[in-house]
Image 1 (tube, rainbow, N blue to C red):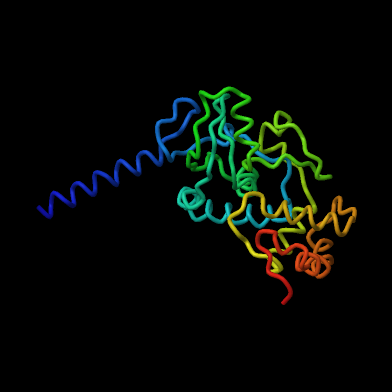
Image 2: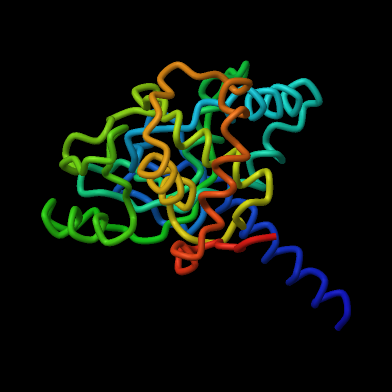
Length: 233
């Protein structure tokens, strides 16, 4: 009896592992979790905080050097929605995926978890679903853009210095990381509204000079309803 239980457990584990390692191809997807080529990823935002990218690239390259890239990627399963075009629209992980794109990896893929399969939806139904908190459609001036103008590839994502500053402010502990989509962008908007600085081309060192002022801003009582708010220390 014990042998049969162990055999059944091994069989289930094998199936689970096989599904997790199966390459997905849009409308043909048959598993909840699988892996996809970066070529099939569609961003759901226009911008990245590029300041965080070099550190992330270094982590990917370290995993490659140690022969542990696959295990590294399995720890970063990305939630996705499959669109009517058969592409995978990532709901999170733009920065880590962009770092993988720019890394030394030869075979570039990610593991994904299918949040919803909209391959049979109309494009308008799909866009309405994605605009309900599953995409961030604001440009560097925080002006809302049309969903159809989103970058088609990861490589087309542009730098957002306020998103970078927001990330540094969070790392400093001035607001908490919470499970809210596009959290750093929400706080980046606060910082831009309050500071109104031209940070175009600012590097990490330059951005760090604004951290103290930024921390004072995000701790203001008027932002107490914002996700991750910590208040005065």
